[in-house]
Length: 62
Image 1 (cartoon, rainbow, N blue to C red):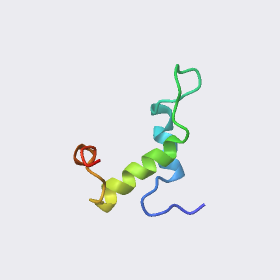
Image 2: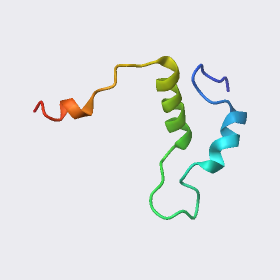
Image 3: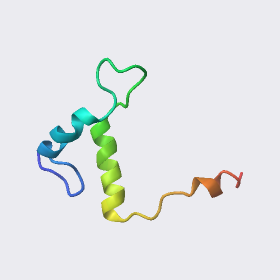
């Protein structure tokens, strides 16, 4: 599988996967896909996206 521009490689993922919450035996509900979440965070940080909604302002415009 080819690594996309903003995604972690398999080697990088294996280094951090055990550090993330949601391991078997942890109490409570865990995330469905931690790798997808991390890749999304990296995309926002690396691409410089500045189009995310400002929730503090939008909640009053109803």
